[in-house]
Image (tube, rainbow, N blue to C red; front, side, top):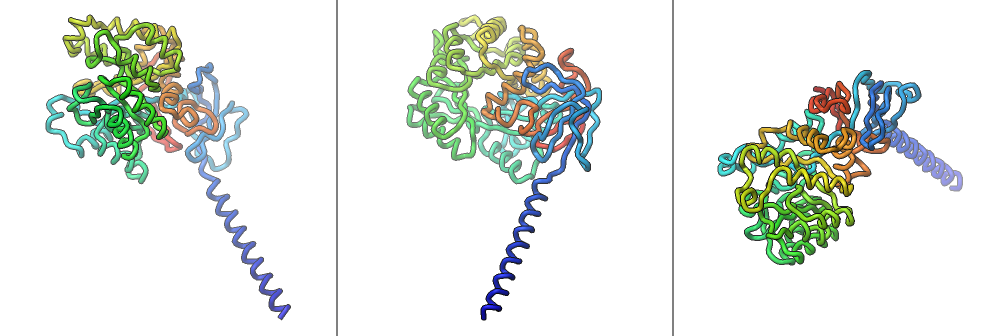
Length: 418
């Protein structure tokens, strides 16, 4: 009996050993994901550091494995080697303010459907992917469309860029956007809390609020968003602002993390933004297009004396205060036809207003990731971060004209060649 018992123990131990070896081998195989090597390029990593020539970027799975001089970083055997000599590598760009589902003209708005809006959003994402933009924050589109796109990405039905969606923009009855699709109204602090909860339940990680709100309403939304771990931004002033202006002030006082646009506001509000570390997405280029087309509401131009120089002055003041700014476009209606060029027009506008080319690239990459709350994963080309980057044919610090037509875009290790 003892002999048989001993044999049984031996067999159990052997089976356990085989299982452990098999498990270890399986784990090893899982860890050894394919490697992609971009070799010989000049790297602008998005941190603001000077360009580094003759660099190799190793990507394994979804993440960047290693970065260094091509003379020092060894390309592993079997890696997919991409010759990037004479090319430039940058992080993928981020658009922090877009409405991907908005119709291309106002007439279409009245015959639109959720299905068509979803396909239009997908079309916009594809246009951007081909332009070197690898992430967008949609700050107000139809809930069903945004849910469908996020689910399709999760299931692998579509291969596109990273979408960060707010779902419905939240405003008050009669406030900015009331009556439009992709907008939800709420009145009073508890309704504002409920609206935020509904967007979180619908699967969104970002919230956008819009005037005309009270301090109590804005504070309720901010408190609820932060309790639920959501990012929250606010439309800054505009047509629904009061006279004298108070909406941006209220939003900043309430604790939002970001202000959209640079609309009419006092210097002390900019001071408060700087003090509290509130970010800004100025959307300068689309305002210039609005003024050119005489599409700015007459009450703003004639009674409140808005001009493009007002926005430009605010940009310069925000920059002087070192308010962190990201790139956003906000082209809706007929201005949707300006995509994808509108994004790169915004980059050039930053430079026109005093930002250096490198500072502007940082705004389009690192700053965008900070605004999204994803600075640990996105925005810069660094080891350990997600492999979201682009390869362009010329030096963007000499001219932004080389941007918008990348030869290669990589998103999470997925290579797209154009």
